[in-house]
Image (cartoon, rainbow, N blue to C red; front, side):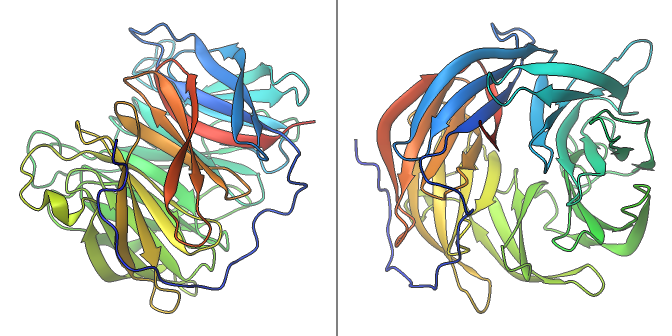
Length: 386
């Protein structure tokens, strides 16, 4: 199989330091899944060796209903999951679950659950201090924040924003669909990707109580593009928004003083070899390499690839380098390991995780031969093991 579909000349950058940790120290890897109509039981745990790239299954970490997206507390002691459901108890709402982590066995123990006040939450993150959890409700078209207690459990909703409206695609954008939420690098602002409105709402963030205050007007992307996920550059000066329905990445200059985003460039996630492609577009995940030299984005809809871009260190703009098959079907998510040496691709519909080695000079992805079974994987996250 020819894994390299298209390549361009390599750009050289100064490397940023990866996470400082002894290279042979293992990581626990948690995988969120869809349990509805699949054989999955919940969240699965694996042990990852960053020296070899080997991923070893530890089995079910905990049973949970549709724990699709995960986030790890900065302390490494707790894990949080959105339960992507439309009814929680008597409420028309999804749920968020808090777990304590056993760093030796990888097992998760449920601390508590809370209603998200919106149906089908699909993304979760924490603020930099680990004091607030942030959730995006996809079908609810809303975002919510929850205080994190000292024992890792969650309080009730602290901040909440309900959106209204629609956008160009009357089938996919008939209503607001919040798809991603996260804090700015300095923890002063919260940014959202709303697929249904073609907007990137920005909020003033009160880290003490989780309150959100809109910074208007909201940033717009191309009508019908459908923003899905956002990734910040390690230097904090640039942000990158992935659109699902246009399969593009928009590079933004980020101004920390007021949380503003200024568009620099929009570039397709598909190589020039697909210039005549007219099929469906379903980009899914985006990540910037810890070095700040490369950006990666995944493509679903029977394309099943991860595209690599180089990043101009001064301008923040992107140049497409290559498109790599993920050796599976529907790469809904992928994650770069904390050392920056490996990329783990979660192929949802082929029920596997494929490991690639990352070339630190070119950003190229090379399969290691390591393919691990995982039922309907949706999200991959790392935490240091003991």
